[in-house]
Length: 236
Image (cartoon, rainbow, N blue to C red; front, top):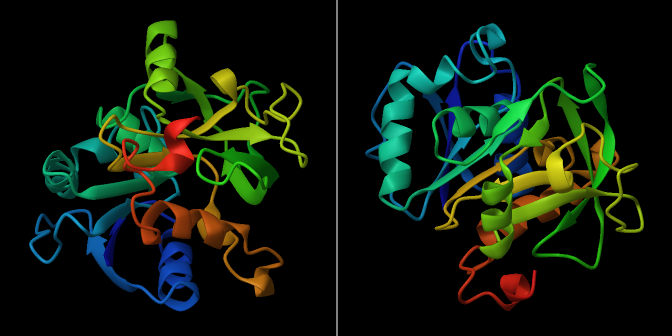
């Protein structure tokens, strides 16, 4: 599997993601400049990643300007063909702005930037809460009630904020996201967005390797996101 990481002006997590994939997960990685358009080296079994950061300085709205970059036109076409696309933090915001994922990311409920470790409960690995960092000022997931119900019904909510014992509570929700939502996918399961940063927690040298589990679950274990075939997601 090959990963392409799109670099926008203001991206600041692209090298973290490259390092995690290349050295901790032994994957092939290609860096992609936002002004380029060519994704011909990738097939639909590969994955394009939109990393965290502050694309275009987060002017207007987070991800709103990056959505119109030349590379994003190719990324949207790649996703429409069934290729895997993954957005982390600012990348999640860009995916929502590009309408590849439903909903939007709003200012944190406390109106402050938050940077700390949090716990996640996943649709794939429900037994073990995973500790990963967050670092955002606009991470509060919002969608209307009908969209939220549709996400739930289709099993599109992949990760929720929880406490260290796996309890999904208001107190364990760092930013006020509706229904404690931390990560979702589209109906087809090939476009994924999440606010937490698994790439910052993939090696014990960093004091945490739970992020490695997330990346393995999402991309390196077969059928994880094929909901009609995956027993791990069937009852979520």
